[in-house]
Figure 1 (cartoon, helix red, strand yellow):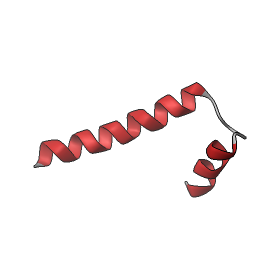
Figure 2 (cartoon, one colour; figure 1 turned 90 degrees about the vertical axis):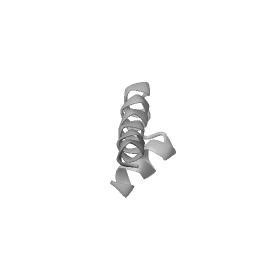
Figure 3 (cartoon, rainbow, N blue to C red; figure 1 turned 135 degrees about the vertical axis):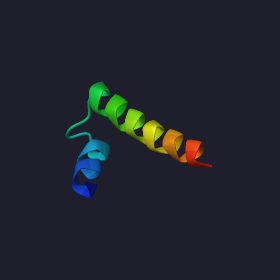
Figure 4 (cartoon, rainbow, N blue to C red; figure 1 turned 135 degrees about the horizontal axis):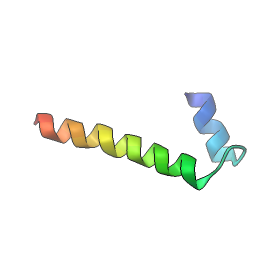
Length: 37
């Protein structure tokens, strides 16, 4: 996972689709944590 993020930040695998997927995943995780409280 860290290797994948490093490549994203270096621009080697940068795409809007990858960014969208990453943001969606973070939003899903934070959203589910809020519901638990």
